[in-house]
Image 1 (cartoon, rainbow, N blue to C red):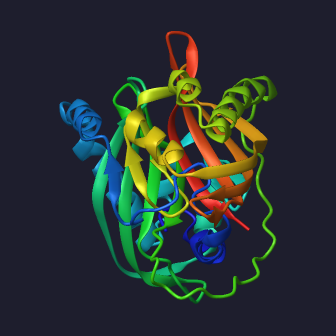
Image 2: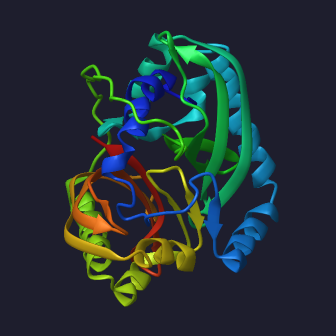
Length: 320
């Protein structure tokens, strides 16, 4: 619903109704999707770190301005707001800044109201922060009701005193009581070319594969060195899990019989020497807590610590 709201209707509605094939994939299998799971000590540490500076109010203010621009069809807002290396990833399609602005401005939405709540902040080094927000919207895009609520994720990067949005994605919050319905057919989408680097993509994908192999093997010791202490996960059901221990529990505590787990079709965007984005398709075969595994569209935001790339934030949406 933030930028590219029409894609929420066309693609993320599809993701919402197709969740059953992917529930639990690399994300745990169970729990209330509306809840935030966390390691309390780590969550408090993260919140104190970002609250100590004026960045919290500043970024929430930027996020609100973006919603206002979207609500008011303010096309001029986006060029300054989006980073030159901006990436979004919806339904397996990557958009760069130009492509994102095109999608925003070509589809007009009628928004009656919106509400932001439950803001969480994950620092990615010293000059990047991910803002995770629960968003409820009343409105339509392209004649279709906008999915609501969703978990919205925006990665902000800092240049001196200026913060810009470098990544955005959303996933509908799963209502386990909602009736299942047939997925609508989605129209083909032409993506603009994102900024990618094959060498970087190969390096980051190798780390991502280590994570998937460790998840398949239920090997906590192999996962711990490749993720940050501040690790945050938004899974395919819209559940937000905060802190390394809580995320590893979500991945490893369910009883799973995993036959295969493979990330593929990766592309990378290097935002700086210490922050990078990897998008990919993840596919798994088997079951967790009796539920079949399937495919998802994944984004891992990497942070370089002491010369080593580590996963700092994971965002997942279901793939059909």
